[in-house]
Image (tube, rainbow, N blue to C red; front, side, top):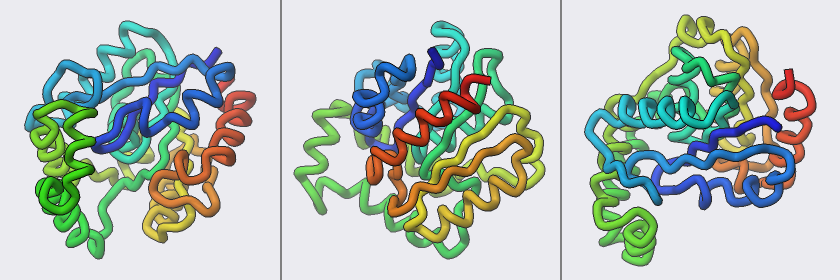
Length: 229
């Protein structure tokens, strides 16, 4: 059975961000849910060099568990693509959703606004701040800052040359509601040598949560074709 390492997004966990997949596809895949540093059940606090820390943690887990694919959402997708550039021996391919290889210039102000909002969310939405503390513990703000600083100020952009150098199979399953994610999927498809694009109609940034039945259906089909080769 295909092993899928599951990588969540900012302020989520593998269980919360992939609940519709972990439950519905348990008979189809061997899931290895990974809570990234500073998130959920992990005991490793987030550090300033979050990209290196998180990819190191994933490599270590893969060395323990064995060969498989990565299924990543948003932050998790960014980490998955970084690993595809310099893959551990256990990595067989990556599936990404909510992914862009770059931050469009027009979106940079929005990224700064998002950072400021999240870091002051206890003022804007105290109920959400409480949920974050319950889910990630009292150091959740340190985690949020580490990830938001990475995604806002040091985003790991993937150039055409970098994408062309990826030898592993890549499956991109972005939603169609956000134009920048449609453009991102087209860019990835144009440059990664071994790529499959599976757009999720009627879905936004979290396509696996927005349209779980369609997303799961496509994952099952992928298991029978690309993931089994």
